[in-house]
Image (cartoon, rainbow, N blue to C red; front, side):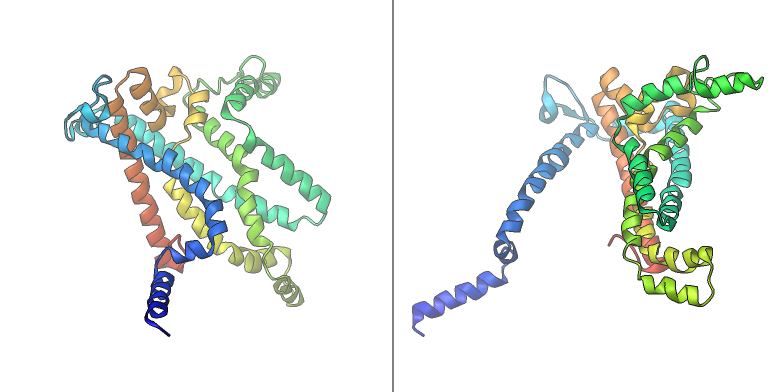
Length: 316
């Protein structure tokens, strides 16, 4: 081997050890990945530069870079406002109820679907349950407004028929959170079962046969075979759900609430919308959003740490 061939061989070995080589080796897969990377770079990471206005007194004419720095002034104002803590409490309470009732609902529904033996009926039920997920809250809010109407809604018609007073669900502070939680659970029930049904399809059927031979009834087979198989998926989904506890659903709340239920229904995202876009306090609204996202990050990290400590399953 002459000197030139030795240099080429050395360059080739160096290239194979570089971090770019796996991407070059799988260049067609890398090309397919590029649009996704570009999407996240433009619409998820690019706008992060705007977070700096949480520490500035944003002026429209000076722009983001030209506005004056004010340090932690907006955060200090935020923590001193009574209205903010009321909104923060609403967010935690509503999100906690959604987690309490919404997290186990897809698991139970998936277990019930898994027990169905009639394939066509099972597919029909699955298809119907998925449908609400694809309908926007703008449309659903209109449907629920009519459905829960005190004058012509079917629920209130039944209540009046049995001699009870009608209930204005969307303007009654004692009912509004129930409406938010129940409609959220109904909308995402079918969609949430997809992951659990996928996990159930991988369960070894011989385990059910062995359990049946041992005399286990249907409930015992679900309890001792199906549920343990779902534990890793349930753990990961729980970590993700805990991270969303403070990320309230703006579309749902904004389309259903009204000033009469602000005291129990106003959440951080709607509060940020009013402060930022309606009252044009861009810096203050950004401070609220940044505070919310920091809490969500801490909750995800904490939940993942607890999951790893308890059963060695986590996101990382």
